[in-house]
Image (cartoon, rainbow, N blue to C red; front, side, top):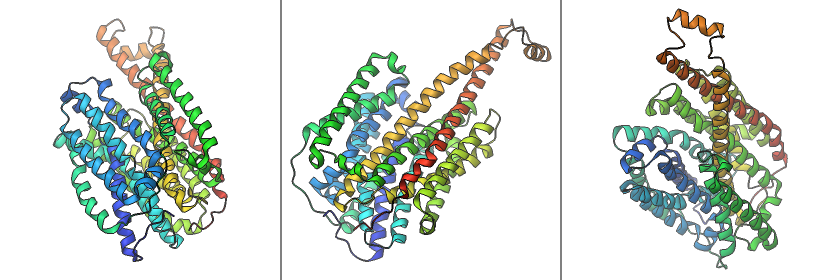
Length: 508
């Protein structure tokens, strides 16, 4: 049994929970903290825009490959020992990222930073669940709410912190900021966390290699597909074929091997677990798809500086944290599936407000309201799923289940960003083609506008001005279309939450 041997004092449980939430938030923060610093990094390291994007891609790819292995590695090394290894590795490679002298170094160090950091979320989630396994439901709900605060607010505050550090100090401090936190956490882990049992089992190298090939190829396709024109690129075609064939073989082999496989696919026989994995993956597709495009909208169309963009989006994280503090009380009286359905409904409402009210002349208050709504929605979706997905699984499966849950959250976000990006690029061109068709002498509204402004359609400056207006409006309409897609997706997911209605047995 992989249960933790812990002091029965309540305060020690909450200290451990706080430590684990802190390190998890730190790792997730690092996924987004560099997004507002890429241009400064590009100039400092002498890289192109496409090349510097690999600092994000390498982190995501390695993170996606390693995350599902958390159960296997926990069983082999023990939970406390593994925590030490990943925190030390994360801190060391954070420092090396800060000292990187060229593009090759920063990409390599970011990949290794992502590989070590990827294990923090699933290990922390499984540990917190085991900490409160035999405690009242009210305490278990509070612990998952606290964990959810770290998971859901870190991506929002990442760009804020990154923007502040880059603007006031240097982009290298995006990485150096991790070091003191890692140094503080290590002795606390040594004091408060005790070791779990270890299992000596044969390493499934083939299964591990096939899974890494499938996940790595798929993640690169998602991150680089849009910029390379998707299947117009031979590289994307080859990587897609590798991902599909590797994944198919991994499934075939996993079904045959059962628990001996590197990942036990038999966990998906539990309806609550399988349903929760699907819902968190689908929700993160919508959530991260929106979060990735909102800063771009504010910075490119509304001309907000990076720090101002972060300040405008910050209340989203604050309201999410407040909502998560209230959720343990709500979960006493309202079933998980109703809370998740309400979360999807609020996500759709926020998306509808963005779609219907966002234009080139809005003020920050117009951005604030839908962000507050969707911040509360993220709490309503995440906390019940994080509390429910263990279903009727045995405690020895918790670490592996947490790894799959974290992987679904991560890969769902990557898929969402790619889908939203593809929709945005395509519809920007469609809108431009349609709007540019109105720029002609037969358009009476245009000729009237030219007369009022004393301009001629044959003047080069006027043509350039009209071109800018068309580009801005086409881009604005594309953003509206992306928000519309998120709204419809959330509505479609509403009834899917009913899969959580199955009664959860008490977990030992």
